[in-house]
Image (cartoon, rainbow over all chains, first blue to last red):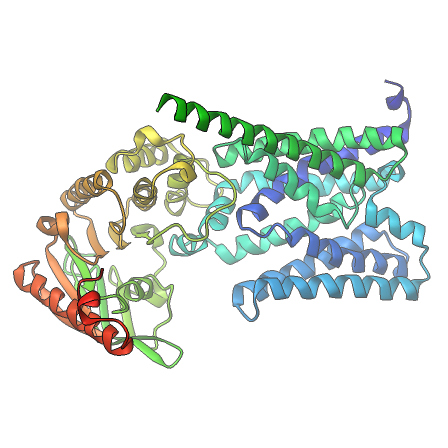
Length: 277
Length: 261
């Protein structure tokens, strides 16, 4: 493997693996709640955080984590308190995040090349410091999503029942929102802010066509996310394209193949039932 | 809770939405071990009463005590089980029967505690009680409506509740699920669980019901044993409701609405 002889490539592949594992681990809960676009909204908010990093001259990943976590908490509070509907709150996040980001980038005089690496992903430029930060955040995300799986499952599956059961529903919802925000910032170097939601949702959507249980879906989606992220990262190196685009296109191809396969399987089953009946 | 303390007590309870009151000045007590059917026409407030008792719907006035404790101070959620009419929002991700039933055990298990043998046994017993043990590995989404309803009942039973509230557990379910539910109810009654269930009619369950509460016009129209008198009262309320519907919808014929066809 000639690829592994380059330090930058090893860092890129490690970052891709971490992102491929963490994004579906959180995404499965968003899909379960039918809030698949939440990651997208947070990606837009994170843009403001990245721009703030440029403006303040600090690490954009750090400011993005803070700003996105605050945005996620605000969104969850708006949703749970019922002040406005969830989709309106999400829309405000979309527009506010983009507008704030562009405004701050203008003020900071940041270069468009730098910004595009956050928008579309640039794994090959992952520094050692980036990797340490991404590793720390990924461990935190996996700890929350895997250790709290039964409780997060209960809340996302039937919130009313979880309330009656006396589970700390608001705390778990806030924790999930913040974890999703952290995942967005972890994943932005690999797939970019505009495509981050895809890696959270597509592996889950692919696997749920085949799996029968929640734990099976979680583990298989994590596995698929890792494979797609690593393969996409290698592919982007050889094709000289943005890593995010390569990873997401590959994930979509796998999704379409699985959809076609399951559709064909159902059709054959139906025909067999008709012929035997 | 001592034996003398009621399992559920409502004192002058008023519940409403917007400007309309659904329940007005409702006062009653349900004692430990009773099996109470909450009957009434559509819109009489049966489900609202159950949700109010669980703290899911705010009270405008009055007080509710659960297992001897005012609702506002009630923290022993593990002692109360709830079976909703249907699974809330249809989940996008598949879940097995065992996973869903296990979620009903979390209140007893506590946060971040590894499951004990007692937890696993409680889940198995809950599934066996409603005869879905052989479906444990099946995805809930692939089951019939009746089987899904049994999953929800098993989920509530997994917490081994002392008080069980069920919102129309037999609505629209197949005959085998009705029989399974009947047997489950008999077992729970034998264990001394207090049961409050919302229903439109008693049907197969009549012999198990110790008391009937009929809601109408925001209050209690009948409170007594499940006898023919109760059945008559229910029928009267139902006819009154249907006639009111005809008055509201002049193009509908009285005959059509009276017999619901």
